[in-house]
Length: 114
Length: 113
Image (cartoon, rainbow over all chains, first blue to last red):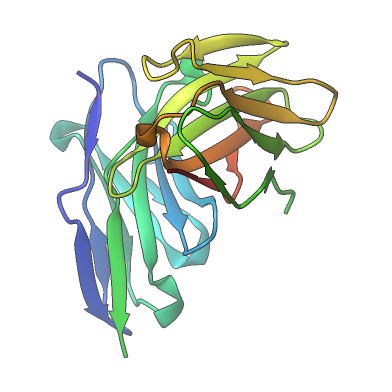
């Protein structure tokens, strides 16, 4: 079955600390992987995506993610978190030939302590 | 950056009533989608629409749901007879080409009483 698992429902980090949000997927075809962020009252904003090539992808707002096929993971990282990063983060997987049909994880809510 | 616009931001309706959620995708986009997120649950795919027809739908998208692109700009989701379990945040999304990124709207929070 196709699925995305984000094991951490809620994470709290101190401002300036590093961050890693975990994402594991189960997908039959070649996966295309995405991280979205949702701030309160806002839509889903794409942080970064992986289609092919270099397994370390850079995104907006200083985020990066690494695709590890052997571990079926696509973890999101940021070296130094800012208070404005507090939001809900969603990992998603899709296939090129399925257009915009994405399967989302449960989401991880990030809180940032001053 | 261009935006997908959804109206209203919050809609309250009585069970059994029809509701229409409205979306204005980005103007030159060709692929349109609806997703929903029940409180505390995952964002779920409902339907995709291309070339004036549904290209794919999930098992959630039963006969109570329909989509329409009535003119060149709007993309609507209609729920014919709402149920309590239809209460959710509904997201519209669009993209220009198949391999481009998906732009999401800010959602319509539907509350069925």
